[in-house]
Each structure stands twice: as C-alpha cells, then as structure tokens.
Length: 112
Length: 116
Image (cartoon, rainbow over all chains, first blue to last red; front, side):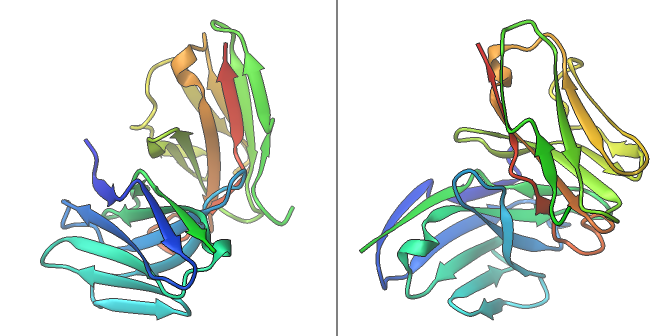
C-alpha cells in the first residue's frame, strides 16, 4: 500500500526550463511534507518542506505548491540547471512520532 | 563525525549468509531510522529507534531482519540467511528528536548489499 504516490518516474528538462514533480497522498493526518534530493552515491538530503497550513513555500529556485483539498503537493524547480540533475523524493509524516513515508522518486535530468 | 556514517559501503555476500550493517549517527541525535532503497521502489521504511528502544518495527520485511541500538548511538541491522531479494542500498538516518519534532532526517551514504 503506497501512501505517497509520486510522478513522473523520470523527467528530462532543458537547461533554464521549469521542472515539475507531483505527489498525492490519502492520509489526511499527514502534517508535514518534505522533499529530499539525492545525488548518485549519496544519501538523500532535505531540500525544502511545507506544512498544510500554507499553500506555497519558496526557497530560491525551489517552490512547493500544496493543495490540501486535493491532497496533492508539487515541487517546481525554476531555471533548472544541470547541477539539479538528481533523484527527488517527496515524503509525508503521519501523526505522532511516525517515520517519514516516501514516494518512489523522480529521476531528473537537466540537459544543456 | 560530522555526518551519519555507515559501514560497509559495499557488501557482496552469498545467498544464505548473514550480514551486519552498521550505522553511526550524528552525535547527540536520539532518533535513528533504517530505510531500504531498491531500484524503482523508493525509500522503504524498516525500523525506527528512539534512544535504544524501537517503538516502530513495522517495516521489517521478515523475521530474518533485526536491528539493535546500544548506548543510544551506534545501530546494527542484521539480515540472516540472506536472499537475492535482499539486494538493495540500506540507508540509515538520524534526527535530533524524531521527525515529530524537527521533521528533518540526516542520511548516511548507505550500505550497498549484493546477494549472489
């Protein structure tokens, strides 16, 4: 049973373009939604996170859009660069001390 | 150390052998998590420790998998009688007080296990 569904599995974007990755969830008790970035051979690292009381959070070129009623959230990478090429995971945290549940990941390739 | 340290970084073993994977979390982090990363399967939660106790073992795939944590620090994940489907990257993460408090997990680089 997959609690967080992520799409697409892979994405190729031209340098300077916008990368968009989407996630959907079912559990309305989720209260924290982070995105993690993973480079080959490395562990995932927190990129940006949002809580359900706001609809958007922006940090530099990275923006999370959150739609509570639709139970969806997305990551937008503006002015995508080759250095952004990595695997991106969305995640969600349930109530209490439950661990993060992750989507299956999106492999992003930014080509010049 | 400055980050989460895992060893070995790579392990090749034969089917049926036991393996131990070690995780050394960031100093002072009380929460420790094990995840498994398989191709196309994302990050699968295995087990979580708060201090030395494991309040959530729900992700362990079978009784061949076990984990312990001693002294509120180092953790060992043991896989007995390894099977080919156990081949994956095993990731360890720590956080200051569990995701409930801070939300951020700090991951190690993982231990890549290959079962022949």
